[in-house]
Image (cartoon, rainbow, N blue to C red):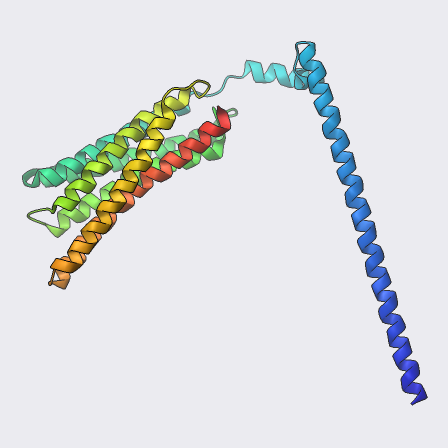
Length: 278
């Protein structure tokens, strides 16, 4: 019994010492974090004071501390070729949407319209890869590299979705298209026109140039197309008795909806770029 009591007290003492060591480490960590935070706050305040004083002197703080860096940034221009590549990709999006609309309207020449979309898809892929190569070799870009990469990739994905929808439209050989697919095509074409109009406005984000109105219109068209999609699917399941026909039309509606959704993602990415660089 006495031995058990001694052992229990010993274990209790070990737990207490272990707890005290943990508490001590925690206190030291908090004090260290507070010291780091105070040091950071001090540095930030010093930078703010230095920036304000340098503005009064008519110079920027970075220029006074690192004149060679300021000189370098003023000598090396930003590569504006990226704007040309983005506008080229936006034009391809618009032309592919026009070809898809023609494929839905002109069943007699649908094969030639689908072939045109396939060529545009290859052109879009080429523009995207040229942009990636240029990002690898460019020192200063007009805006963040990641934003350029995301935007050019999304523009290509819109064309790729159009190509997939067009090829499936041809392979299903639907003699007469539904009014719902025509409505989807019209909404998609309008959204792609807005994309094509919004991309060139990235050249000058310092002034109000109508960019946000184009982005708002893209989102409105996507919402409209979403309503069209759900109405089309409801009618399809209500009226179609042949499961093969139902599967075909479901796929066509889904592909058109995916393409329109991509336009909204493009609009969101453009808006992020505008907020960062306005």
